[in-house]
Length: 302
Image 1: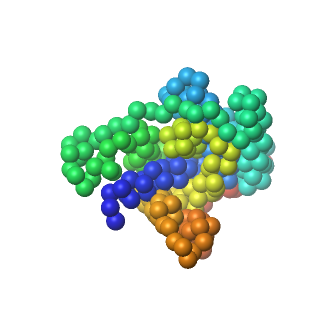
Image 2 (image 1 turned 90 degrees about the horizontal axis):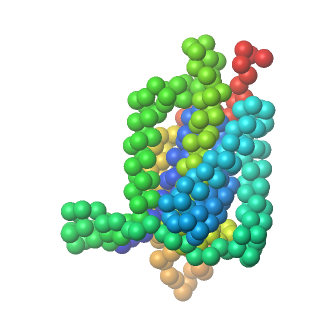
């Protein structure tokens, strides 16, 4: 396997990794976030608009804020009003599809695509960029890819080594016990879901601004759901989510590069999704879900 294949796999795995981290933050607080796909969709649209109108930094900011705002709806619905987490997430996915179609017509005067966007300037990794066989992997790298990789140890550090992270995880494991110790359960759940939305919005922004160069309807192609699968495969752990995301990235890179006169193109494109199903079938029963994941909490046992 050459460095060009590794570079392609890294690019393909980045939105899945960000979606997996997004799901991890939410579920560690005890809220299932099926709405990751919708948050990626809304992030991809507003990321493209922000980059087109003001530049890539604003595209990144717009994308993250858009994902965060959609996540806020999910948080209010599930935490305050005790709406079923899956129902709320699916509703947000549908809302995001319709809302982006409407906004695209209003802003860009076309239904399914935006104007071309402005991407970040690419970076070369010092010292490594002089090693010949590594050159495709460490040159012309998107800053968002580097940010996504940095977020893996950062998420692990915050969740496992800080007071905030330990409180968030305690709420996801046993909210009643956390409440008796003075932890604001509702605040921690809101924080987890909002961080999740911002990361999902960043994943969408990467697709439209850094990967494709424009917003196109349907461009997420289920990567929010694949991110959830990567999170489960990684056992709700940032490092595990990275490994699982790279696996899916390799599968997608192979499906793009594979050319066959015997196997229909549609079957080759199914490789990442078939891998997702295989992983879920083999891993879900052995994965350790946060104890209070998806369970409604009412203060004082009301």
